[in-house]
Length: 139
Image 1: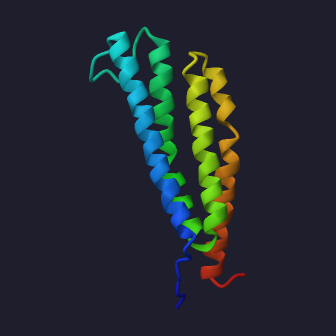
Image 2: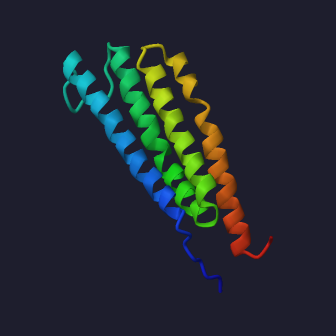
């Protein structure tokens, strides 16, 4: 049996999770504002004739698609390495914001500006892997 004792620094991971939720709400608001401005009514998910709206929608949707992986890695990796995981999570969130701001220009190629967020994702992946291998007694 392995006992897991939460380090006080795990609170940073929880704060990053809260911050990431705020980031998701911000992105949702941006889509809603653009929807209203361009008169794209619900339940239309993507516009047939407005690529700018589609860029806003896609930036939000892509983040939602990746969010379960992010939260899993942040919160599991943070059990073993809370500070590294929290920093990785912050980098991922900042990358997702840069990704959205690039996409919001209407030029989908500019979403690449947020690719630095993968550094944070890889850091969290490492922390989660280390946690798993410790539980298994491999290292």
